[in-house]
Amino acid sequence: MKYLRTFNESQGANHDKIKNILSKLGIKKFTINPDGVVDVHENVTIHDESLGSVTRGKQVELPITFGTINGDFVFTKYSFSETNTSLKSLKGFPRTISGMFHIF
Image (tube, rainbow, N blue to C red; front, side, top):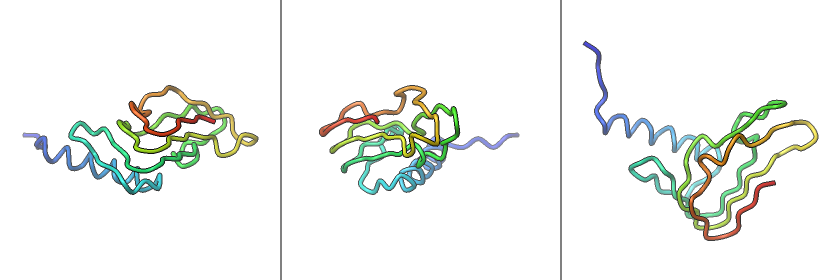
């Protein structure tokens, strides 16, 4: 018989994974909603290198889903000359931003 995790155990594991990603991105003030969508209560700046996926010709996307950002949201390429990265999609980008929204 296979061991099946209960909903709460799965949710806890997912929240730990999300917290780890947010920590790597330097985001400290956040709320993780029951559906896994993250609301942030500070400015967010994400460099493609901070996602750990900068490779020549690599398409990147956010590993988590943002809901509301109470502040600015900036996504930028860290190094234009050495990489040829591009956004795969806007999947995971915030639904609502109270400040400015920039993609460089």
